[in-house]
Length: 377
Image 1 (cartoon, rainbow, N blue to C red):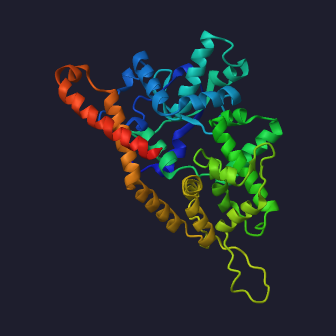
Image 2 (image 1 turned 180 degrees about the vertical axis):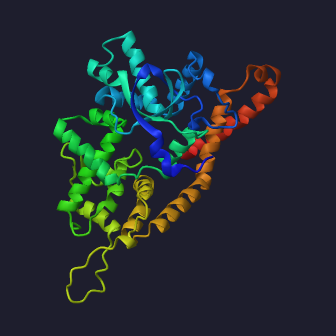
Image 3 (image 1 turned 180 degrees about the horizontal axis):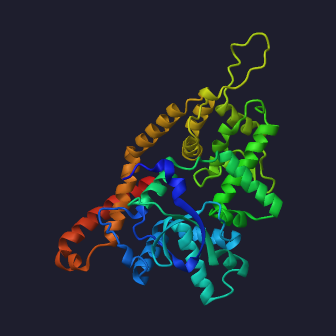
């Protein structure tokens, strides 16, 4: 592979190309596997090859999230599609296959039903602003996708993403479903980001920890609204109409787990700030452990509240569950259930062929059942 990364920008020419002249890359690096077969240039534009490529993108790479996004926003040339000419008036995508695939799906559906999407969106799809690669690199798709996906675009902090969603909702009067579609999120996913933002705002503006709260706490507040933590959200008394926690005492207690204050060693009344580095919940996902304790092992949850040692509380809950599973009473009840199930499933052939033995066993069983019933009365 040529060492020409420093000159790549000189080998990219800005061009506007008809969508119908742009073809999906069947040799997309995303498809690499042991069974991957290279498709030569003369076959790239064949309908069968393009259809297989499209279907693989649809099945494996969430294309319909992009479809929904484009149907709302149009095709945005924020990140330029990079293509390479492989035949007269034909270009194959080097970077941007998912977006071109989504654009083609929308165009196909529009041709079948003109009400599928607005004319303004279609206008944004007819011609695509591209960068045409003119260099001699044998595998340019690997170079461009490597630069983008291995080095990567710098990820936004989670708080900034949530702030953007909320800002759009407020400025454009959008629902969670509508703002989610703009960014390829479900209504539930968008709701998790938005609720986390309002919870963070409450913590930063109204709690006892306004001096400590920073963006590092946001992932923890967002995690409260995951599908794994409804019991913890309810413990804090989340009001989904007002977008706030109503139990301020418990909310402040939760924040103290993130910013513990060492107040015992202060003698002169100096204000003490909580220390993030000493937080009792090391990862946002650990909130799922707390939810489990609340739901299944309340004594161990109270143990955590008392001493702040989540690992000890979790180990104690696990041991309790193990010991309960070894309880002979529980084991006996399970055996009776299995016996009842076995009786329900007795095959007719057994009744016919081993009738005498079966009667003897059932008689003995009947006696034991009657003794137990009398003892229970």
